[in-house]
Image (cartoon, rainbow, N blue to C red; front, top):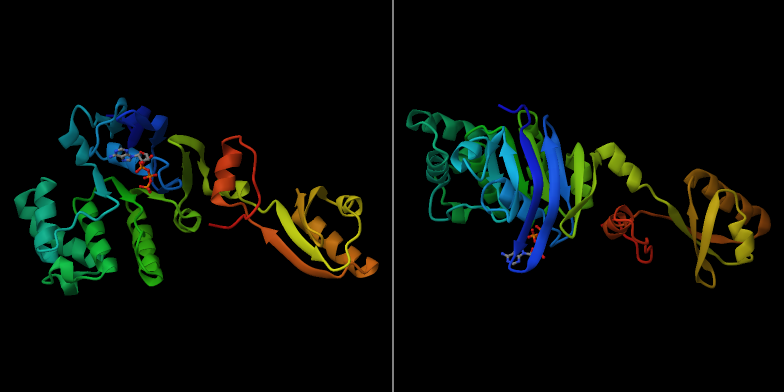
Length: 316
Ligand SMILES: Nc1ncnc2c1ncn2[C@@H]1O[C@H](COP(=O)(O)OP(=O)(O)OP(=O)(O)O)[C@@H](O)[C@H]1O
């Protein structure tokens, strides 16, 4: 038996003639939360659906605990729990009926189903709704039930596809807390298009763009990629562009409007000190000084080796 939890080799998939993912490779051999970060259409769901045996890849292999999911799907799926983008809940069943049903389709021994159902309802805090029809639950509680079906059989790996999509801010915080608790016991892989979500939850990040990985590394390495690298300043009484460009630490200046400039730099503190002190002593009358964070699009572009387009940068 292989010691890795997941091994993905040369995974490619196409729908009709369009390639959704191309040559994806990765391996998970320890616990923690792994994030697949990518814009809509980047290929995240395709990777997850293949990983969980819902979709058959055009090329490549997935091994879960050393078991090839294409060749031995039932065996491999014992080690995985999956919450797809749309929770696979059955609205006309009660919470308890649905979770028992989930335990059966996970091939759990019949005599363990009752205890496992009670345990998982406690874990995701839905016990008080056990007799309620799922269709009468709020979106947040339906998501909890979706999470419960993914962990009822205590899998090594739990895969969440955009787990907070469509939830309100409170529900988002609650679901994130639950995911963190689950990650204390199991390896979690989640997908999201929200930068803050990976920052809030993940230890490791894979960034997907147009079906390919453009970054793989720790959260700290990822954070280094999104450090601010420019500021916007407005001066009521600006000096020449050359004078601004000569400020300590400034690498490049772009003029955005007659009195508004973007300064690119390597060390933010030196530049801000220089702008503030020179504005005071030279009477430039600083009215705006604002850090620009790299947007998700810019990070994708820079990691893909394309030109960074800074205009309209947001922290999306
Ligand atoms: N069943 C399908 N038939 C045809 N094309 C598809 C199908 N599913 C996905 N695609 C296409 O494959 C590409 C990757 O889609 P995928 O759903 O994997 O991306 P994603 O990153 O999960 O995005 P989203 O968050 O919007 O679901 C997209 O161009 C998408 O339009």
